[in-house]
Image (cartoon, rainbow, N blue to C red):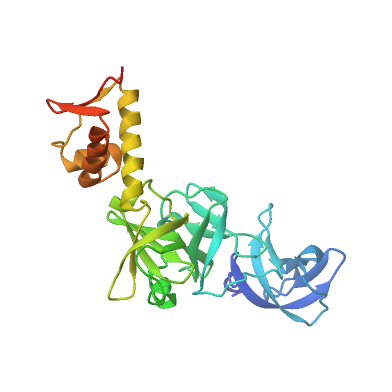
Length: 291
């Protein structure tokens, strides 16, 4: 019976416990095993207000560097089921730890991660209780973000919106904007591949009937032509004045090599040809000598 009672308290849990006694180091909380040596220390440094014997306190349990179960009155700032943008404070082969305002970070198993995280990144995550009864984190927050979102209004195509990436698929990235809009960033509209958690400022390209929006990292077409043309020109310069890409090159190859659509490639190439800087020969694009 005692062994079963000892398992009542586990690390990464928030529980209410009774103060059994107070000593020099702090208060000892009744572990309800009938053995005072099992009582859990609530150190003075982990108390947010003074406690006395008989008080019932809400505490966050964790293991100290020696592996002993320890208590802190600094509990998570969020409740189970809530989502928030949280900082990554540590990583391991098995997952990552996120800062929720408690004495220790809450573990997020690898299965709950979206991509490989780095210390210092801020990501959308949800607090939940795992099968063992411990608090844990997950980046699978689509349902919660959908419920928290609102239809895009008072905006128009061409407006800029900022938000953070919360999911990434083969088709593109999903962003939750500061206005609580859900935005989809097609991979064809990316200038670089963003990381999950990264904050982006993007341009609205389409407002959908369901109130969501499509966005782009690319500038408006007129400006994009100049930027793409410069990229192609720089590529030619780096390759000694010629490259095996032209109007007839497959769109998949263009996308893979330059990160732009076939139509954007042709517009940029046409811009360079109009300026007399390049010409196409036998499937190659070459710089025209300016001498």
